[in-house]
Length: 173
Image (cartoon, rainbow, N blue to C red):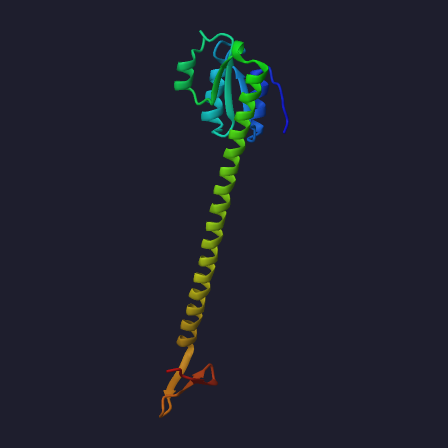
């Protein structure tokens, strides 16, 4: 696990576009502009399609981004005012968000493993089906190439002349 502090939105945009496994983003609302953080949330969720990272908004100017408005209009996982973030509350917030992220990653991995298993099973079925299909096709080709078929009296043996070669085959009743 690595911890990075990024103070410029441009750097954060670059890092986010290059890394899709960022667990927690502790994001200030006010950066270059009064809504830079909220704009960044939309970019992360909508443009990057990143729903896994846990985004925690923190603000010192809750008048600029009221909690209820932000929670209802942005896909964030927590909202904290800087004044309420004591060392213990910050630890709890980060620890909880990290556990949520780890749980989501685990669920996604299990889903991918299950999907991988289903795909492999379908491929196996497809190969078996095609093998049977090819065997049937080969049999049909052989039947087309048979030049003469004649039965012997007791019908237990079939005489087949194929490409000037003679075959004798027992018929299973």
